[in-house]
Length: 493
Image: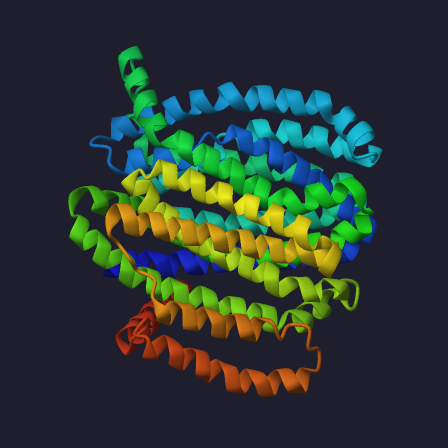
């Protein structure tokens, strides 16, 4: 349990650095580009992302699961080769297809010729991007978390250094030049990190081994593949649908709220980096210990996500205006529902990697995620004429994710007799959501008074529910203290 917590703390720090740099990068790009330009960028990214997800095949999570339980180092490379062959059987046709269809998508479907070149660059980038998640699986599956976390922090800085000058000088196209260069550098860097420790053990699988690995990987990967397709289309649903009949400037308002809210997933991503390999092994070897570790760990992560989400929404007007003045003020009412859409998704992400994937509950994975996109779409259709198009899409995102988590929890209780959500979770969720809804208030003095009141109240709730204890707090402070001492020693040396 302590080992899991230790690596999660380092993962939070790594992802936190990457998230902060990414947020600054996104704000600066949004400030440099006009609303129309930024809207065009987001439409192109959304189209490319919605098509690019079809290369996923669920191979990253499935490979991590297989690598984490591999008996020999030689097996790690064999799993990588098998996954990569499968991946590029899909990636190459998608990349070529997107490149050839860029003209039709930009000129005929979206009536916006400016997205043709961005889509073509995106298509080329997919070829380099395809291998990254599998390389990431090699690093996390072999539990070399330290290397992975350092890479995540450093590569985010590389991203900043690429995007800012290229966007400044080449505007819309510069964004996609940077996107291509970033993915080339990321793929090369990850290859070095993944295979350097395996030097001398890079043995290709025989035909019989290849077929056996394909069967084993596909036993779970196809369900993850469908789930990833549904999630990506859910995430891109608003931008893709709104882009069909609204001006890019209006789409930009929605896309900015999405950009801000989505940064919250960095927390759940940092958890899944550690939980998937560690808990997959525990699930197979000791189910009782697995349940105990997951439940205690989930409550801590639940508390952290709610706290950050509540105040990320609460302080959003102040944070955004520091970089963009009043340019995106019209996005403020959309931020609370979008924040909690990704709060629910963060919980889904953790539960999926920690429970459903280790337990191979493939049917539950697919049905719950289908309910997410259906719930969002139905909510949007029913309420767009009542509360407006943009609010209907934002609240629809939150509604769809909430329905998804309810179905997922029902299935886990039914099939595993494992219930880890109770009335304390619901009370804390409601309290955090109430704080988040105060986002549109802009007066800084009212914000400060409210902050002084709400922070102790939420923290008291986390301790009162026993989700966080004094021992947890002391453990965190010790880890941070040790980290600071190590940095000081290295600086002195």
